[in-house]
Length: 473
Image (tube, rainbow, N blue to C red; front, side, top):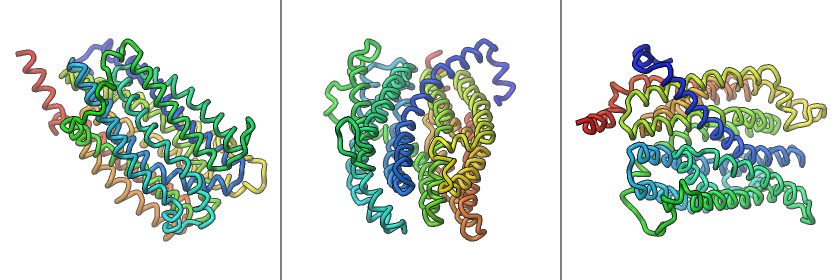
């Protein structure tokens, strides 16, 4: 909770106004995150209807693809705080345009090398010790999926722009339409309907690629035609490089990308470790992690709202506004994650039933393992939400390098080794891996909160306070 001095400095009306602003930004952002994840969830559900082997191969393939995607998402997370700071400081539209264009150029720079690597999915998975048949099937999926990377990252860059202007509902409407388009694509291409021959798992990857192209095109049209956005002329002379702004974008975006990559890739590593334990553990983990990821979209949305609100106050030189925005988002996240954790504890089999037929005896072992994994996931939901919103608060201050080191320490120095030791040395299997994940999340959440609490002493707001003082003079 915020210190008493912060509460005393502002009226209760200011805090309630901030809460309304955070909620107003958070719910469309969280629903947009859920819509994006719903596309992947749709893929997994339909793969599970084909066979358990298809589900396991899809889990392997998508987790390799996510290494590139998550790095890109983290890098493009720099868009919202940079645009918000420009808007908060009332800078010219050309400054905002420069930031968004460099975000789009950055998406291109990430996608091209990622495509080259992902084309070798089969040999990579085989070298990591995965089952050869599953590796081949996963490669078939990724070869159709990988082309979704560039249009989806472009969509995220434009989403950061509209969110910083406090219009996240625009991206939400497009994202919800994308869920329907992706589901229809899976139904037609993967399962074979509408006169199309069934393509199997490759059809799911192609459906996601086509949907990502539609998402970017739709949001680009809105950015061009909507009166609030049209004045920024985002695509005007977009082919001209702006190396100064490009470097500035990467200075903030690169540590943000590394932070998110450290977090997500530890879950990817957990998938590979589960594959070494056995197919049942791998399939159960795919289900449990998908449910936990759905829950995580809520604090992620609040964290994104905190980035915008803190970023606007940062750009305006409003120190009290920074404190108010951050602490309000943090308190809201804790309340939401306690609720979601209780849902996981009370009804695990109902949630698992969304992915597998719980009445089929052949799925009994997968359901047993998924239930135990999901109960552990419920226990660390609160700290997972805390680290997500904490990262968002610090991102609003354009603070990325130290949180990156926190993520490296918590996830890879502590979380993964603890999980591997408990799984294979202590013979706890998949449960040990999940305990390791929880320990890493707890460490990172605590460090993020400590850094936010000490932001004044660490000089994270020194620049904006100086700026505000100059304006008063």
